[in-house]
Amino acid sequence: MKTHTDTSNKYSEKFEFSPESLAKVNDLIAQYPEGKQKSAILAILHLVQEENGWLTINAMDQVAVILGIKPIEVYEVVTFYTMFHIEPVGKHVWEVCRTGPCMLVGSDKIIEHIEKRLDIKVGETSADGLFTLKTVECLGACGYGPMFQCKGKNYEHLTTEKVDELIEQFRNEAK
Amino acid sequence: MSGKKLLLENIEIPGIETFEIYRKSGGYASVEKALKTMSPDAVVEEVKKSGLRGRGGAGFSTGLKWSFLAKPEGVPRYLVCNADESEPGTFKDRYLMEKIPHLLIEGMITASYALGANQSFIYIRGEYMWILRILQQAIAEAHQHGFLGKNILGSGYDLELVVAPGGGAYICGEETALLESLEGKRGNPRMKPPFPAVKGLWGCPTVVNNVETIAAVVPIVNHGGEHYASIGIGKSTGTKLISACGNLVRPGVYEIEMGLSVEEFIYGDNYCRGIANGKKLKACVPGGSSVPILPHYLVCKTEAGQDRLMTYESLADGGFKSGSMLGSGGFIVFDEDQCVVRNTWNFARFYAHESCGQCSPCREGTGWMEKVLNRLEHGHGNLRDIDLLADINKKIEGNTICPLGDAAAWPVAAAIRHFRDEFEWHVKEPQGAQKRNYGMIEEKSTTLA
Image (tube, rainbow over all chains, first blue to last red; front, side):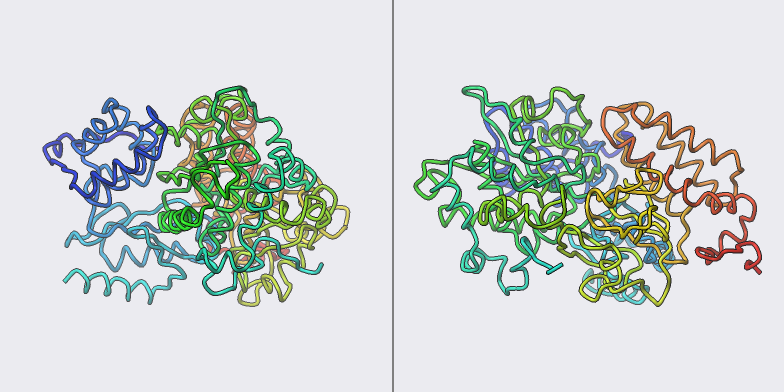
């Protein structure tokens, strides 16, 4: 369970749908029977998050307008589902699985290693704004752990060496 | 056991994820057969004959579930595929959808026809976003070739398929929570009755089936229900996908014939090839994190000394005293170095995190269990905590709208039942307990130094 966090100081961050994503939003809504447009909300929120990195209150309000629902209906959905970020995050969010099957094959060690290498704790963002480290519950990669997911891609069979390589790779790509 | 495969038979064929290769390999035959030669009721009849049981974990008869679907005049009916695979230890549906997506699409078309649905949904967990795109691609291909849309194969039957993502909530694998989520709301489970078969998606009659269940409809229609029922043992018919993980030489997804022995599955060359790093088996959770843990001496044999088999009945043999459940097929194996207390705490934390918060016994109880187990694991517990856990357990079990409460309570109860000495040891010798390499050793306290 998550509780709603008041991010009023970031309220002023405006979000605007690009024409392309607005077209995608309309396609998503059109998949559902008339009057059932609210069903598209999760897909739309994923789209916004992909574009913006996280969900500002302004972005959620615009989703409400598009769907013809009250803003509170968007907030209550966003705060229920753990994939949505309601605080600013780094460029890359590493979501490391911490649940039983991954723990059996060493996820604790991997989390500790990432913390040390990036000099942050779980939940924090690195000083350069490149990485946010989160732990999540089971991502359905139990046979391929330890693992993390970043931008919808899985990085599996992790070792400390592989983590080091990935950190380098992500840093180089950012240059 | 001949190792017969019904779902993954063609999975190694290069390009099987494309319509062209899938079709060349005999794909979409069940759609042709059903739409051209069978009535919808005849398809339901075959599924009933097959003895197919829900592959998501509950094991309820699929044919029966389908026959409960209400059919009022002028009201749309829906088929919803539950692809919200989130049960720790379970990754079989992911494998199927990723490697052979058209099998699910084919199953969806045939099953939707049987149920009279003209729009069907696949609700897939948000963390499987890349698979969502694979499925959308498969749907687009099926459309191009006339297997979806209006008047499919000239039969007069219309169907549209929609893939909808979740947002990261285990509870949405519960069918009524899934429907709430599909309606764009928080995933709070609904009171039953009314069951989804009467009032489901948007208040209309709805069937919710697991990915593997829907895929199994394909071989059932192709070869007949009786053929499917001839595989397996007793009321556990057909094949089952098992996702094996934990400390195994070869973890992964295997299609097994129901009735394979657990011993063969763990140690056999065609399956997991034993425990990794030459270690010994300590315990096993055979059906996803929600089912009771089995100590090593109850994994391959039942309490009565019979071979334990991969069937709904044999894995449950002995009830909750000495048995477990087939569940979702998430087969988690622990080697001798693993700490049962730590794992029980880990799973308790999972349920506390995933409780939707609707029912007090679950919302509060899962949090309590997590706290008590946390202090036990970290050496701050006392012996009364063990009974306190049992007490919390009883207050959750059966007192919640959905089964998440039970799923949180059962594994804790089972862990204490079989590994009570390990819990006590965490209280009496917390320093030694941190070393954890005690799993199978008889004289625990003497081996600490």
